[in-house]
Image 1 (cartoon, helix red, strand yellow):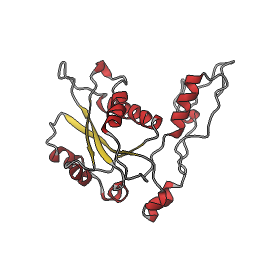
Image 2 (cartoon, rainbow, N blue to C red):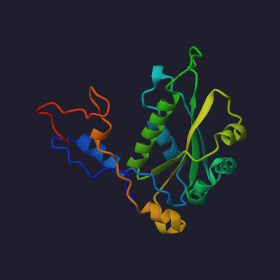
Image 3 (tube, rainbow, N blue to C red):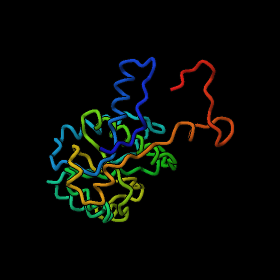
Length: 214
C-alpha cells in the first residue's frame, strides 16, 4: 500500500507521547480507494473539533467548511465542483467537503495575508486526528472555485482553498486501472537538509555539535 511518509526514524530518546505522535504521522497518507461506508456525524465533528485547536493569526480562525455525506442533498453540488479527474475516484468516498479561508480580519476588516496558511494548518490538524481514528483524508486542488462560490452563494470575502474526502481505507483493486497503479506507488519525501537552511539560501542548516542527529 502506498505511503507518503519517509522511512521510519527511531527517536533515540523518544517519550511515549513522541512515539505515539510519530506513529500517527507515519500512518497518514492520501489514498484514493475508500470504503463506501458512512462515517457517523459524531466522528466528523470530533475531527473538526480537533482541527479548530490549531494556531491562527490573531486567533482569527479564518477557516470555513462546507461538508456533505452522500445522503445529503447538497452532496451532488459538491461533487459537480470537482474536476473530471478527481470525480473518477471520489465516488466511493462516503463524504466530501471544501475548506475556505476568510480574506479579511473580522475585528478590523484589514487583509489577513495568512488566511490560507491558517486554513491549511486547520486541515492538517484535522487530518492527523483522522489518522488517529483509522480514517483517511485526501485533499484535492482539482476543482472549480467558481462553482463552489456560485452553488453555495458564498460571500466574496471567502476563498476556496481545497476540497477533500474522508473515509475508511478501501481496496485499491476497486479503482480504475490508472488509479490502482498510483495507489501502490510510494511518494518519497525530501530530506530535511533539502529545505531547512541556515545563513545562506540553499545551504542546509548544520546541527550543533552534540545535538542528536535524527
